[in-house]
Amino acid sequence: MNLHALRLFHVIATTGSVTRASKELNISQPAITAQIKKFEKELRLTLLEPQGRGVALTEAGSEIANLAKRLFAVEQQIEQFSQDYRNGVKGCIRIAATYLPAHFLLPVWIANFKQQYELVEMMITTTNSTDALKQLLHAHVDIAIYGGIPEVYPDTIQSEELFQDELWFVVAPAHRYANQRVSLSEMMKEPFVMREEGSSTRERLLSLCRTYNSPTPTISLQFNGLYEAITAVIAGYGASFVSSLVVREHVERGQLCRVHVDGINLINSIAICTRRNEPLSASAMNFIHMIRDNL
Image (cartoon, rainbow, N blue to C red; front, side):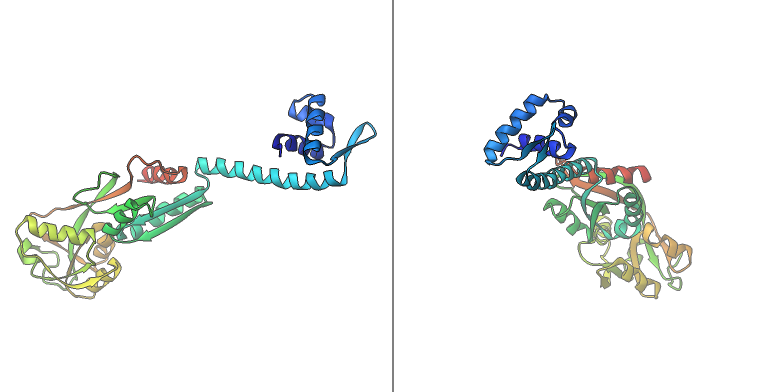
């Protein structure tokens, strides 16, 4: 089917006149008439018939005009969607985030983003650092927001550090080490409450012990969520090693206390990771720009 001729016919049916269609399309009336004649021969149907000085739709022409109206309405929807998608107004962003950014940073970032880009769908998975990078590498997500310092990023991963925070040893206020200064070996004698294997903070603690030739701690309680681990320490059991972003308010309220370990001052990196040399959608780029602007 000649879609160009169908479009000419659609404009005639919409405007009700070959003359008005000619002006709207900036095509001569004879050229339009010739195209319609060819189109009628192609369909083997009469679409227009003379009426006074103008034309009217035949019964078949009226039916095809209705179908054409629906067709070109869908075309407009496709064009509008394409424009919105190119501009990042519509789309879907899949994010894998480690616990720290997922609970303490992403909610505010997403709320700010959705106020401007309400039609963008966002899918967030909270997981540990190992799984977040695995999901990114396997293209299950578009972005990984990572809290920690992985020893080596794969060559296919592009990382941008957003900011840094400190890692703290914390205990309950009644603990004998609360607000005290101790050695690393003394600290490692305490039972620890930590997240599951694959957590970057847990790996940082074990790496710290290897670096300083210190005995590794006994991880007496292990949780899949950081909230549960912190709650256990607040309740009075053991110690934990955690980002200051997570526990700062608990410390300020007196629910937890820091333990100052001699010679230990570790920094936690919050980074946004994407696949190297792979373009992001406009909506994902808008989200990253918004994060940068709100740091």
